[in-house]
Amino acid sequence: MSDQSDRSPRSRPSADAEALFFFERRDLDLPFYRGTPVGLSHRGWQITLAATALGFATLVALQPLGWSGFAAFIPAILFVLIPLASLATAAGWTAVRALFHPLRRLDWALMAGFALLNLGLTLLLGLVILRLFNAVENPAGAVVAAASGAERLLFFGWTAIQLLGEEIFTILPFLAFLTFLNTRMSRSSALALAALGAAVIFALAHLPTYQWNLAQALVGLVPVRIVLLLPYVITRNIWVSTGAHILNDWAIFSLGMLPGSAA
Image 1 (cartoon, rainbow, N blue to C red):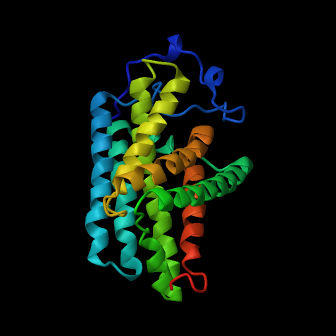
Image 2 (cartoon, one colour):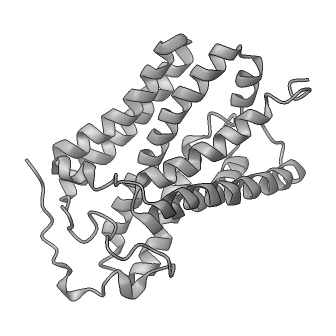
């Protein structure tokens, strides 16, 4: 049964009036925070966010067990399905469909453009982190460098699904923050704070990856996560931010396949 929000959008300025970018999509607003196409009650958000955390906990618990072959897809698939199923339970499948839209021609360019922008920012922040902190390398690069050809194909396959899960893990809290903040400040301010809050959660979730190096996680991941969130804010389409995220991470993983990189 769907949870509908009681808030009416009539007294608020339109999304068009407060667009962050001139090319921000105008025919479709971000979902949930104004009660369209469906709203979530406080309980609905509690269920959805708890399941989002459960999906992440499932991923963290299952991946270290050494899944190989096609079984390696299972933790990533559960990471995606658990929060989406809870969102459908809380607000119906209309809420799930509100996250995903058909790709337009411009969307492909936005994917590539933001992937390149984020890759450049990642490399720049990597240099800063090396100078300021005792940096810890992401182990994914070593995994792909040591893998065989078939293992690499499977690795890129299940990481694509996991990166979709990371977008869901980021965007649902972002929309929850936006729902809470939208009635308390302007839309632009609410978007900025919601993006920052979601990016901090994303960075903290990666602490085990970087051996609990808090400074590296925050400095290295909060800015790049905000950049990767922008394609979703612009297009309202999780496929676009996922595509940018996949292109960015696959490019970084591929560096480990270059001759001499594993030395």
